[in-house]
Length: 390
Ligand SMILES: [Zn+2]
Image 1 (cartoon, rainbow, N blue to C red):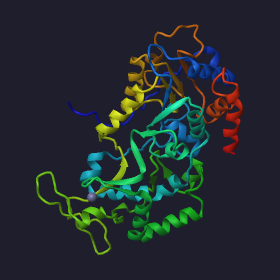
Image 2: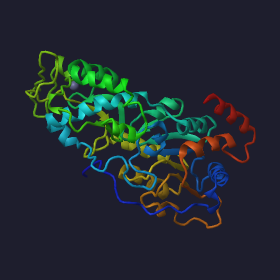
Image 3: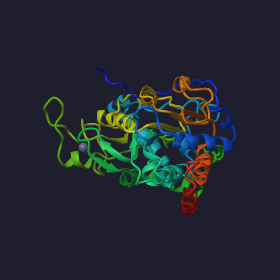
C-alpha cells in the first residue's frame, strides 16, 4: 500500500463550530464542561486517561504564527507556498532558498518559548489527567514545557537537521553557526535585523514595515535577497565516510574550500528534521501516534483545525474506539460533526465538549479551577502549579 503523503492543508473555511454543551459558551461554563469531560469514566473498558492532540493554535501565544487566523482563514501570507520534499531533495537552488530563509527565521523561533497553554498541559499531566501528547507542532514547546509527560512530535521537529543519506541527526543550533560562517554577508544582515528589532517584534505589521515576512514554519521571506549566493554545509558524517547509495555504489560528497556542499555531490544533504509537504510520516511515528490514541480513554484536541489528514485520522480513530472527544479551538475544525455524532443532547461534558476559546486563557483557568469538580483538594495543588508559572 502506498503511504499517505503530507499534503498542503485545506485552505477553505470550515463551518463555524457548535458549542457543546451549550452552557460552555462562557469561561466558567467551558471550565465546568471540561472538568466533567476529564472526570467522567470513559465508556466500555477504555482506560481512564486522556491523550492530548495539539496544533499551531497552541503556539500562537508564543508569538509563532498560526496557519489559520481567528476566522479559520490563512492570514499569514496569501502567496506563501511551502517547499516540497521532492523539490528539496532534487534541487540545489531550492535548498539554498530554503536555508537562507530558515537562517533568518531561526532566531525568532529559538527565542520563542512555551506559553501558559503548554504549561497548563504540564499541570494536567502532573494532576494525573493527561497521559501523553501528540503534537503537529515542530517547535518542541511540549517537550520543553513538560518533559515528564511524553510528547510524540507527529510532524518532526526543527531543533535538529537530519541527513537524507545516513539519517544521522545534528543540532539545528550548531547548523546555524555553520550557515553564519559560510554566509558572512547574510550573517551581517541577520545581526542588523536583530539589532533593529525587526526579527524580535511579534507584530506582523511592524515586521512587514521592516521588509520582513514570517511564515508559519519559522522561515522569513526577503523578496530582494539573492538566494543564489547562499551556501550550506554537507553532512559531516557522510563527508568523512561517503554513504552507500540505493544502487550499491558509494555516494559522492564534495565540498568547496570552506566546506559548503557542492552540486557535484549526490549524497550528504541535510534537511530539517520535520515532515515536509510531499513527504510521508515514518511508520514508527505513525504507529506510536496510533498507540497513544489506543492507550487512552479520552481525546482532548487543542488549537488545531485538524486540516492535515495525519491529525484528523487520529481523532477519527479515537471516535471509532468510542472515546469521548473535547475540542478547544478558535475557528471550525475539519469534519467536526463526525466527532460529536450520537451525543446525548442533555449531556454536560462527559460525552464530548466543543469550545471556541483560546487555549492560553482557558487551560490555565481550568488548571486553577482544579480540573475536576470532585477533587477539591487539588485546587490548592493547582494554585501551587500556577504560582510556579509566574
Ligand atoms: Zn549523512
